[in-house]
Length: 134
Image 1 (cartoon, rainbow, N blue to C red):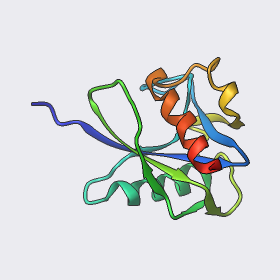
Image 2: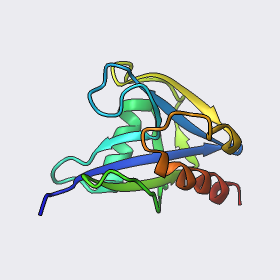
Image 3: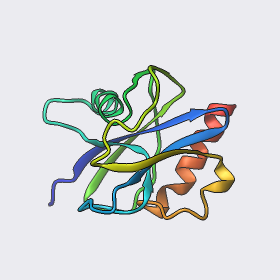
Image 4: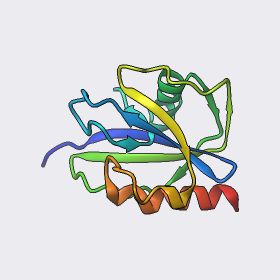
């Protein structure tokens, strides 16, 4: 049995929009596509700790009260942990330009035309926005 790689991602949602990052075209894995911010869960770290660290490293913000949400992902080598984030401290910015060349807010109806890291995640991302907006 192959050990899956644990990944934590954050769906930051505000005003009915979700923040996506555009993965740099030079990235080895999932280049030149849109994705949620996040990354590997480090050894000894929980998925919750990882998503908090990744948001600080990639977006420059301290997330508050991330809530675990289901996330579909088709890559069987990854163990996905997704979190809905509606509150954070700090100003969002691209703090990891070597990983992402853009970040942008999207309404759910704008997501279908995007090249996503994994198209199977799209319904989960839309659901996160719906959960956040009640």
